[in-house]
View 1: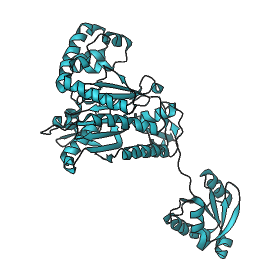
View 2 (view 1 turned 180 degrees about the vertical axis):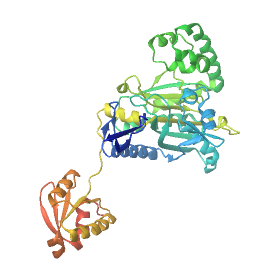
View 3 (view 1 turned 90 degrees about the vertical axis):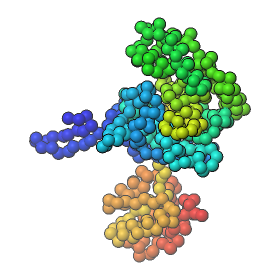
Length: 450
């Protein structure tokens, strides 16, 4: 029987069949909960708050949102990300329909570039400053903060090779985390130079590591021939020791690329953005050139990365453009962001309480309440009501559970007098308000009045 379902039996007769979420995915519910792996899954209200902060920061930096499909042609991702990357070689969710091959997007940069080229966004004029928030998919082993369906947010600045774009992208990335209250972060910075630099360095690194092949892990030995730059990401202590004397990519960078990198650092210094230069920071995707960066937090343990990105001036040509499109961006995982918020002890706001709860007694009152609720909502109030026909005591208990500051009580007497009993829940004070004054009274009391 598939692990994604459970079937319960009684007297050899199936009573209930319930399905479970697929391994490596999770549900976002109205309440926070802890999953089977011990990770806290934030509530939908907490997700909404974090996404709102991200959107606010993006707007302050004058970025516009872009939304691309969650599945794309396989060739786009393979050519954009790189055939030899782990993402393409073993982490994609791929499928076919007819003669066409598709993949659930494992990242968003290549799809954004596809959209930029397809819709001729350069004709809008100026630099295209775009951001996104949405799900991505990778078929990797689930672990804390890493899922098969995960959520990314990020930015893409397309159409400029100015070093200020590099510095602004880094400043934007850090501004998001600071706006959410996260402070203990480290920015690691490097340059990859041009595409020719990367090729020359790849050869030099392979030549250096070849004599150590027998000392490398199986994963690193596979990478040695296919993509040796990925070995620089190793967390194994003995491999890190081997790499201490490895060639540095900065030794292969041209004078122009050095000047670009120096200017980026100057702008970061002007912004008082501290950073650590990391000669082994190369990122895992083939489209990166020049500036590359990563934001980390020790609070997350071994898997410390919060966000990362870099310049990818060659991506447009890789996905079919007849001319290069200079571009830079960053991507960040929402799940890792929530882990960082938890580690920092930052409390996020929960769901907003209703402005008022209306309790009804009797059929006539329920009918009046049901109609009036819609009018109050149309006026701008957040209104809750009972939909189960429960007792007044049960309805008042529900009003307390939902933290409603005011409760209206409507019964036969109130209908006859055309006046509601309005109870302020914190003080217990109760006043009578005429039906025709009710909307204005509640708007004024709840701060929703214009």
